[in-house]
Image (cartoon, rainbow, N blue to C red; front, top):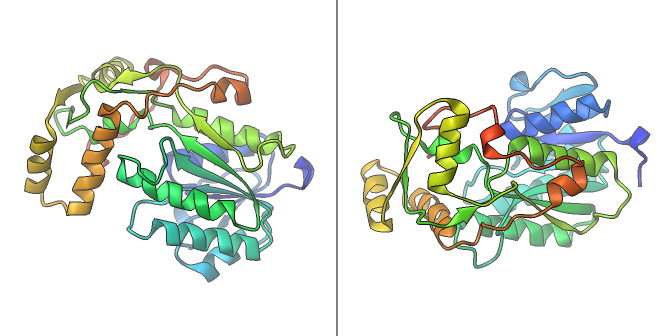
Length: 291
């Protein structure tokens, strides 16, 4: 396996909230990077980082060219398109052909073939594909981003959904990025084939979480509970597709059923610092950024 002095990391999704934080942390560690994006003009300018692309996940030849020269790939999962497994498989196959030896895949807590949350099933499929791919790999199952409820708020900062009283160990993007960076900086092979569940320090209900977002942001976010039927009617009225409605409602139902309440020690164990409480997070997306 390459030593740190010979590692070059390709980072996908480097214009996004997670990928950009991974890239910044790797630059702080003086690790050479290839930042891969659909629009290279939007990629961050960082020391030791080259811009590669345009390269979409579904474009095998473009992705192979983009990751050429990398030894490790950080694969930040793509948006749900109905073909996420195929797109992720294309990236991994292109990377293997280009000589990439190791893949760190950002999956989702609760990934399973029978997961309540629709998107978690997609992630499980990619995990199964990776298990048979000709590369070393580690699955980083991220908990629900602490920022997600803020992005679901409407213009009046109200978050509505059928989340019930279920709890979630919401996790900060910075903590996930710190774990990924640690896996790269301290690679001794000990996490090959591992599935790491990365969570925040405590499990909160949506009402508690959104209350903490209000305190941290200084803005009056609030949560209003709905039944699944009310949630369907409101989303249908907005003209969303059945797939979009299922994905959105199933996210809340997964919370309501308690399947995302796990709190793990992965963040402190791999980074040496405690996981970040929601109240201490200093970045929140604008309302309405998620459908």
